[in-house]
Amino acid sequence: MDNVSILVMNGPNLSRLGKREPEIYGTRTLEDINREIADAFHGISFEFFQSEEEGELLEKLFHCEDNGAANGVVLNAGALTHYSIALRDAISAVGIPVVEVHLSNIYAREEFRRTSVISEVCAGVVSGFGPNSYQLGVRGLLGILGQA
Ligand code: DQA
Image 1 (cartoon, rainbow, N blue to C red):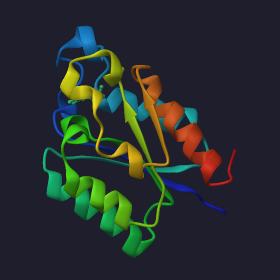
Image 2 (cartoon, rainbow, N blue to C red):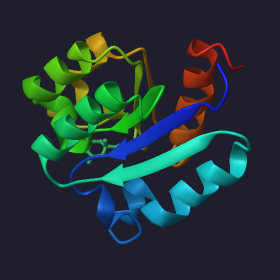
Image 3 (cartoon, protein in one colour):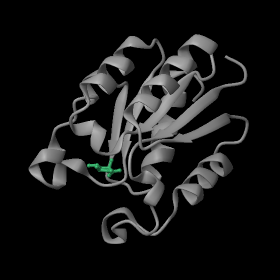
């Protein structure tokens, strides 16, 4: 596969990284994290997308499939992880691999965060490595895509 394109997609509240509960999520902004991803993987095309809206995340996934806009997706769905059956169904519906990532270890936090309704339809899960979770997710996705 030449010219691999990866969509790095973030859901609600992740636009607030840097000032949002830094003791949990760290002090890097989403822009910092995205820049570090692009710097770490030369030769890969990245698109970065964040939305507070569930429907916009779904539409972005459909767009990727319909337009071949991405070969795979690294997704931090934020709180939608824990309850959005619509997001789960969309991930399941598209024929491109989606890797679930979280900055925090969702299995070491409140009870309600220990359930992910999307894990079952994701290609893999990375949780608990702070900003590195995204790069680990990209690494795993490249393996799935036969690029690593
Ligand atoms: C998160 C964990 C979620 O429980 C939370 O709602 C988030 C961020 C993480 O990256 O650790 O918004 O996905």
